[in-house]
Image: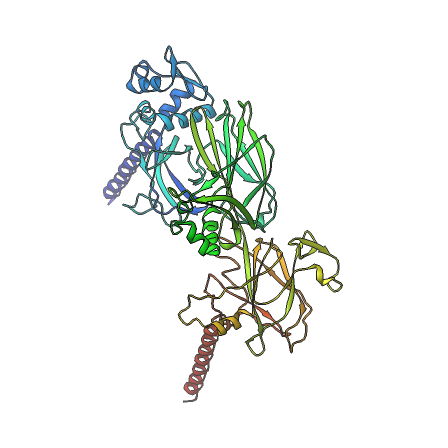
Length: 595
């Protein structure tokens, strides 16, 4: 019995020894070639990139060679080195790049300059970089010739981003570059244990240019790199140029979309027309083919051209950037204009006939429109491009309702107001906000009076009629016009602001309810106050011609003393069924106990 115990003890000791040995081997292997799970989040102007293919390549070798200047004789006699010498000027194996920096044996660089040099070389001589890095090896000193592919985490056979723009890869520690499927460099990172997810917006790659908004509250940030503001609000952008990228200066071009008006640039600039004096309308809308067609349907043609051209810049702003000894920041003051007139002349070659036109570019035609600008930097023969954070607006819809009888009501008048920094402001007839002290003592002629049947756009001094939805299969002019007469739509609002409607006139047969009707306009990645009503009557909404769940919903604007919360018939049915089940269950229990 005692011998058996000894044998068991020896067996356990042997097993533990084997486990300890294997563990030591495992630790040793990890220390040589440690892998880190790196998570990637990719977007395009804030929108998740689904199905994107991205790769990671460890660049410790080329990084070390450039930063320490330890290029070997084998390197300087290679075909990759010859390619570099043919692309750039060189002397005694010291190569001078287009940004003025040099690489070669004994030439050391800071981490910033090293990354800058790799970016430059990847744009011009990709194959040389990969060759000097060791045939594109993925592990330091390794022999693998392929980069790691990012893929859906935990799923094999899906080497791309998921619907949220997310992907991951197990990578060795050290300096690594992330590229797209075309070897375009997106970012240089240093892989370390416990690092945060790498976030890349492919509209603003690693370019040495950052653009930020400096004067908007956090409440207006409605999505990644996107702010929801009122038309006309001043928005200040800061463009920062990294000195390590642009030590030799260059030419910077700012190209804003047509309705984003540039009010001031803190750096000397030249305003240049983005369009030639004469344009061919067919380039912007191929359904417009002749001057005769434009004359026959002037309003329709102008709208088509306006919708197309409003997405483009009317002007470019060119800035000459001197050699930089430090980072340079440039402030660009802007605002989104509701209407910009584009004066031009149109023609249809080879026809020589011309027609002068003033094309109105209306920002409010598309409630989902984005406003921003593109920046292009030319430096040392290289060109990089990035985009600013975008601006947009939101709004809200109301249906005027007798909530006691649950019926639509016509008539009524309201003022639009907001509370900002403790002050009460009302929207005036001059399309501006005016501070007031007492809502019960107003000169009503000074303010915009909101009436059902209209769209009110902040930034305009007159309303627009609500159009009829003629696309409905059961479209009826008289019925749908009557419904529209109970609706108020407001556009051009800012996310997070405290707004209110103030009744100043009651519909016929109703008492005036002189009480602020408070609301918040909002927009986020999933919805907006246009598409999601906080307080609605689902039965009434189904009568509205342009109602669409999650897209165009209407809040109750009650003309009676009490206003219920959202009345959802489905919820009422469920409650009734639940109550019935409860009663049946209770009766069953009583019967069982009795018998």
